[in-house]
Amino acid sequence: MYYPDEILEQVRAGNDIVDVVGSYVHLKKQGANYFGLCPFHNEKSPSFSVSADKQIFYCFGCGAGGNVITFLMKYENYSFQEAVKALAERAGIRLPEAEYGEEAKKREQHRRELFDINREAATYYYRMLRSPRGAAGMRYLEGRGLTAETIHRFGLGFADGSGSDLVAFLRKKGFPDDSILESGVAAYDEKRGLHDKFWNRVMFPIMDVNSRVIGFGGRVMGDGKPKYLNSPETPIFDKGRNLYGLHLAKRSRTEQFILCEGYMDVIAMHQAGFPQAVASLGTAFTSGQASILKRYAKEILLSYDSDEAGMRAALRNNGILREAALRSRVLDLRPYKDPDEFMKNLGADEFRKRIDAAENSFFYELRMLERNFAMDDPAGRTDFCREAAKRLGVFEDEIERDNYIEAVAARYFIDKGSLRRMVGSYTEAGELIRAPERPKPAAPRKKEGGITPETRAQAWLLTWMAEDRAVFAQVSRYIRPEDFAEGIPRTVAERFYADPKPGSIAAIISVFPEESEQNRAATLFNSRFELPEGRENQEKALHDVVLSVKQSSGRRRAAELAGDPNALQEIIRSKKELEELKTAVFCIDTEKGREQDG
Image (cartoon, rainbow, N blue to C red; front, side, top):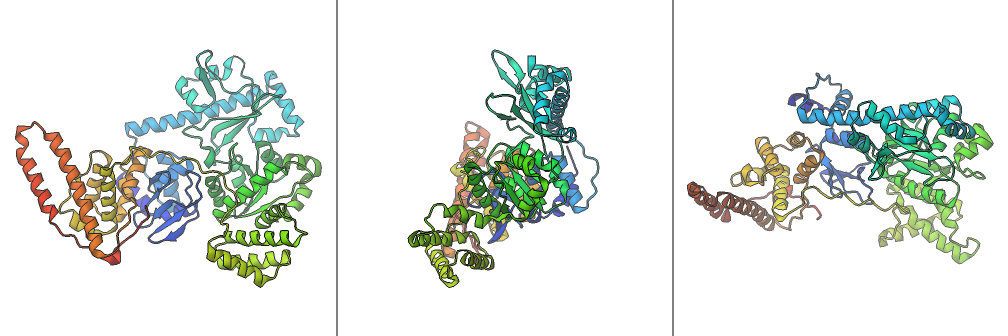
């Protein structure tokens, strides 16, 4: 897929990356860059960086990086063309028809094929539910109180699985076996070959925000295990960045969404007149999902099961929502276990009353905390007050924290001044509890290609030159693009030397078609290094890095030319340049100096 470079530059220039990423991720300015929690892996401490100067993002935790187009592709699971179109529309830019290169055409066709397979599978399940073979599924859904309209709206279906009929159906449609397997609707083993993944299950199609089927959840009929079976993650289905029912909930035009635990809870909510209900997809709620919700709502109501597991989930997810700068409250469903049961027994009007009475998430956390203390005993009550004071550390804004100190003091009959002093003492001692229990972070993805001392030095140098034009002017007298390792480092260097402005870096990222390549390119401009104190030491550090890159280049070139009788002059020239560099002097303006951890 191809757009002229000038059009892509116009799209990038019309969409400031801080504004675009900031609409998905809660960002805070730190020094020259903005930082937030990475939407591409779970983490507690912000390692996701966005550079306004370079117009790129980079996560120091998982290695994800790129420009504003890359971000939208990763976050929304868009193709390149879809991301460019969305950004062009956002900036009011009219696009010409895109031309396709061969590789881009193959990637786009493969994505379309996976979407098509999922759509055809959804159609197959939908029809199966309405056939005699789907009678058990229809009885189950009607027994749960779902109307024909609701079953239709959510595209519910049934997987019979007899004889792997879905696989046969998809083959007849012309889809190849490897794509059917990759789509997640089929499985493979030596005994049965390619066969239907789902059987004897009511099927819940999972759609992305653009109403495209990306996966399925299946509820078994009877007592089979597992009770719910979900599609695996695929190139078009990322469980941590999608929410069940969002394609419908986004049309509700309300700033208050309801977050449920399961598919049936969402469906029951919609049927009862609460179309703003959504649910996570069989996994723990993630910061990425919180960022998605932030696009559509300002407040989230947690409608979780009233059992112990549901209460733990509410505590955990309140923290995730708070970190995404979303207000949250917790619904009390007692005496019923879940929203579906509540709606059947008490109805929509009573549920609206529960919404109005929903508990502030912080006070919910304190109420759960109370259970650990003997509140009628002075010692137990004192211990509770201390823990409450520590938890007030979740509010970084001074005014907000002050308001909560007053509210907590009033609710628990604590002297306001005493509580404020207690919070202050914990602040000074660094003992504030910044967040409630969180899910363990997913292991960061292994960075592509590995980091060697040679590539680390090259990344340091490129980052340094990109952030200080005076450094580039001096270094470029000694280091040329061909001194960088072949492949991505050299391509990046060639492009950067041709246009050494921070704003050109976003365009350099776009040169690489593969996501892994863009991540590696972004790494080269986001190297973390710590400058020593003082101008003289910093200048020595720059000299050492430049010398290291030049020496590595000389060794590579000598190995390449070994045995070539015509290469003597080039080897002599290279050694002479290296000797000159050893005595070179670099000057650094310490006012522009930078320091990074790591």
